[in-house]
Length: 93
Image 1 (cartoon, rainbow, N blue to C red):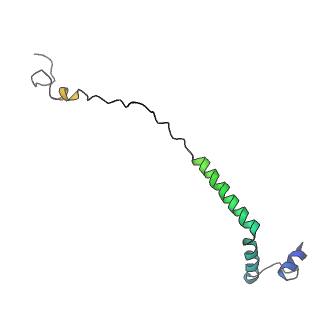
Image 2: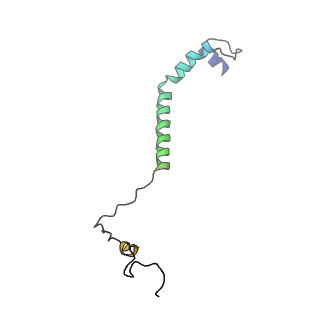
């Protein structure tokens, strides 16, 4: 197996360390390979789909029909003191 890689790089099999200048063409060849690009796109789309499924929330159904109008509360009459002559909250004297 080492002989195969040694032939591809142009070095003998005993030299296992690569310098940066020798590594760059290999990385360029790997990253520009059609299979690697297609696999990376498929993995990205799959992960995007998984994150969408995890974050998905169903919206509650909107209730269709007549809207009920809320009648004004009778609180305004109670605040003015009512019909006890504007007196305090004390019981009858």
